[in-house]
Length: 156
Image 1: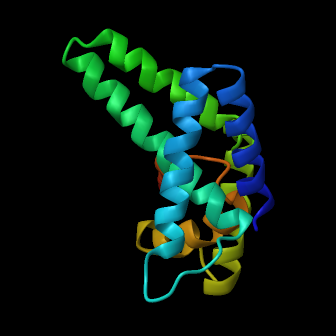
Image 2: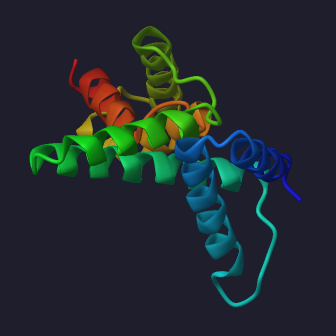
């Protein structure tokens, strides 16, 4: 079993014993999403830690979007609950890259693609650069931030 999934399960048990309802709810929903991911497809399989991280990141994104929707509808209590659950799950994700680190990774990837092409890449090569950057970032930055940084590097 993936080490991260085991940690989630033990943290859920501790949260239930400690009567931490928000933490227990967030972990329960995440473990349910992991189980759904494991049994989806043609045959059941066990997820790796990287796949578990992707599911957790997806759950965090869902919580943030739900919080925005609830806040927009004037349901502040529900929005706060979603934000709290998101914060619980973010503890399991790797530390996010700051803007300087992301920019340096993007510059390195642009240089790699330029070396392959023999010329400076433009907006047409954004896909190639994104592929290279995403391999280096590995979940440590939101896709929107990465795309914006790549767009800025290719335009400038």
